[in-house]
Image: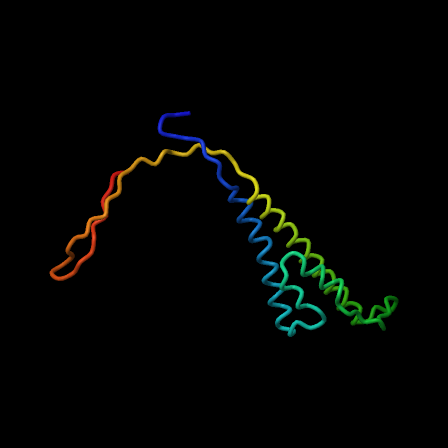
Length: 138
């Protein structure tokens, strides 16, 4: 180890940032889309991160008059919503896994020792003002 340096353990920022974005962006998009439809058909569960899309799929009502042979529009719309909910759930699950992995694991890095002096001294500023002077050596 070089002089003036030490070994530190730091969280994995790349996984934390990537996981938070991968979880947060589809979560917020799901809430936004569901709120435009007044959280109809059990889409209020999308407020729950990572589990919301799966709970919504399990509890939502489907059109029972759907004829898959003639492929009516109701069937197509329902299949599209289910597909988007599955993609949303998989993306949020991946983001959750990345976020947990980043928070629970650390990496070892060589960091410079912080040797400095920092002083704050009250001082007059201008004719009638008061403030301070911050000085130091880094």
